[in-house]
Image (cartoon, rainbow, N blue to C red; front, top):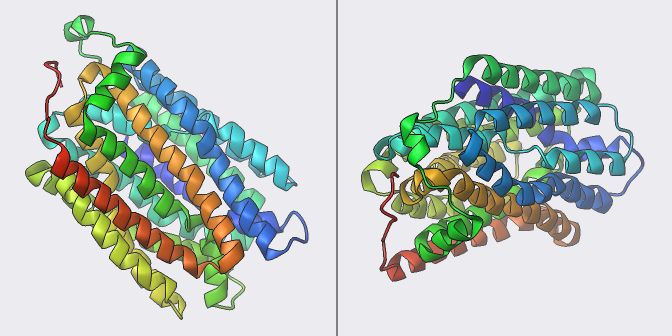
Length: 394
């Protein structure tokens, strides 16, 4: 799964940095139009995935996560392959919409590994798996930028789809999912109402899900605009490559410390580590708005990457700790829906805001969102008196 996540993350980030540049090839559009549609096209995938994710999670609880990995892997590959041949903004929009129905390969891999990992080492294990994702995110943007500058955007989409197909094939051949044998038969199958009630009864669990949304809003509000921001900081013909470099800086910082954040969460508590990371993320994102040269932006993207590196594994490990094993897939699906909702709101919010008051202002708002998320978590920890868990096999 580490290698599969590496391929999927690398492939996905090959094309994300230059979505806005790809839109510009479809016609002669003004900057506000490109920024606005960058947000719409970036976000529509996650809007569709918001509704679909809990369904995939419920199916995973019943039938296993490997079939879902195959559907999402091959489905994403086909969608991206077709994007290489589109010639209009609306065409790209509808393909990204279709892709949303099968988005979720990496979150499903987290659910797969989480379901088969002892809760005492969940943070460290999920952090290790996350290293595959961030390693792919590290190399993908640079490789994608080089290919886009050298061979063109369409060729990059085709190569991306082939790489994701290889990842799905690796899962098909190399992954054997252990369903627990006799213990599986004894598991209770929860109704949707029971799962939803479980989430609402555990206030801190619900808070973690809301934080997942806020974190994604903050993180994704700037990502579709990063290539345009790099263009403001430098004048060069290798714009796609430099945009990929700025993306990769975050991934490199992520790679260095993700496993350590997860391990620390195992030792002192995942919610405490999340509190630390939210404050650090706010601190390191503000200087990005003040960058006057590209290396300033790259440096603080790197530090920002170190801060956000532990958020996903710590949130996932916390859910692994708080949700019974037989409903974990669906609970993680709801958490993923919150994340996808943030992925929808973030790009649209960032695109509209930058169109009115400039790209640099988005960084300040993002920092404020991280601080609000910290405040919500602090308040929830202070007022969460019940830590009751269902007497179930966790």
